[in-house]
Amino acid sequence: MVKYGLIGNKISYSFSKTFFNSLFKREGRNDLYENFDVPDLNHFKNILYKNTKLKGLNVTIPYKESIFKYLDKIDTDAQKIGAVNTIKISSEGALIGYNTDHIGFKKALSSLLPLPTKNALVLGTGGASKAVVYALEALNFKITSVSRSKNKGMVVYSELNKEIISHHHLIVNCTPLGTHPNIDEHPAIPYHFISKKHLIFDLTYNPHETSFMKLSKEQGARVSNGLKMLKYQAEEAWAIWNL
Image 1 (cartoon, rainbow, N blue to C red):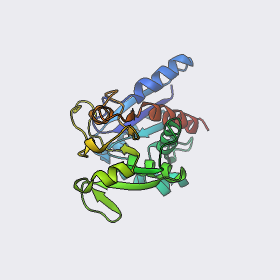
Image 2: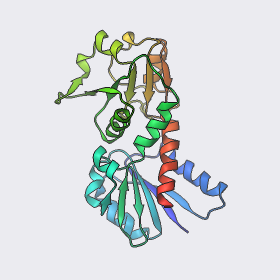
Image 3: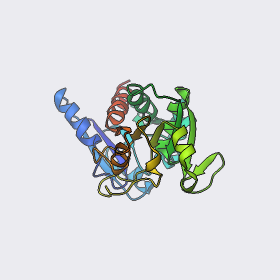
């Protein structure tokens, strides 16, 4: 039996386990996908040692960047992005890192375009946001990143005003705010400046409609969660594992 899995922290909400085990059942495969919920990456080598049948792993919050030092090789896109969300374990045991988030996001977003402008506001600065920025750059978007603390080339939430919000017709939430079980949380942006011209994309998919999406929809915006992105990136991960 071949095994696959997801490594992260507080990941009981994740859809990946259900997605892949359903895929295995449909295809009549005797494979298994399981969650490896660990408090830190010091447990990573032990997971590999105890699970010798592992062929591939997905990586999620908060390890998409810190996983780098454990890998033997990193794909060019993942290197440029600075985050890994997929690991292929070769027949020789080599750990090869990839990023399929940017592919999943690009595919999910493309079906929702065009927009009045190609200006995007990206909320968050973690591994997921790096993949989103990479995908948006490939689609020729102009990007403004929003952080909780002042960093070069970024704005902080307190600086968001009518001019900035109205100028950016795509707003992407790459933070974990609003993810189950903390469903009442949402990014601190001035929602009253959002309009029907906006597309609001939340990478979160549990709950199906986040507080971020609800507040934006009340202002007339189109909204999308991250479920299609997740499915697309999972399909890409499956293709990589079976190269």
